[in-house]
Image (cartoon, rainbow, N blue to C red):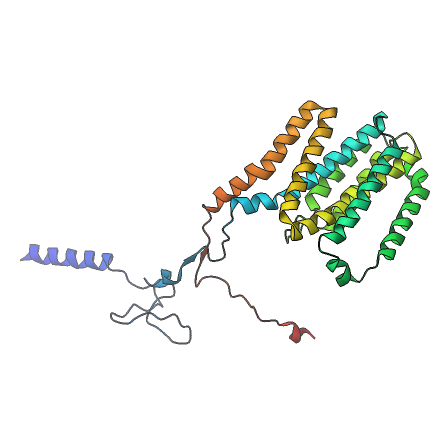
Length: 318
């Protein structure tokens, strides 16, 4: 009889240890009572209670975007064009510094290409963009003449602006400025790091630094003018081509890349091979990696997300 009592007590103690009990101050779940996701009603459940239906509202990759490889390659053309622009600018400066290219020849070629680009800029959309902006051709001509006269008048100052700075420092500053131009350039993404003004200013600053190491003031004037054309006017034309004629945009990008590679090959064959590898990586390899990584994306959404106020509350701030 005593052994039976001891066995019964030990079984009761084991049952008490195995049964979950609420902490002091908390309620125990009532059998048959269903948990509700409300805060205005007192329920017989502990604060840390998790119902089995909690994950019913789980959603994965609600706002995920599925990219196509061709579309990503098309968008990467903007990066390829800016890389080629920097490459052509540096190669052109090297030609002028080595005496291979005369400032008169560069100015004539830049003027002819600018006139051709100006005609294409209006012909792409039949002048619709000009009608929307309301800007006349006379205003464009006046701005061009003012910029040309101002740059030509200050070219002696630009030539002697950095005489007290060593050439190695000038090259390092120019490389950093061109790198910053590529980083802050507006490739079409809506990000905080994008700043078209800062990107253009860094490119012009690099052109002024490099132009100060050229032989004459005329070289500096032509170099800064060419920098304004390739870093300010050329992206505007490419942006319109991309929006209006995508096929023409792709063709121009390919021709522009081939021209940059051909120019760089005359300076350094190894550099041309490395630059070609960089362009292939940006236009082909990086989009492929992005597509593959999209398959591993796993964003979860559910009742635990923070509340988002989508209503316009600006009227309360007046």
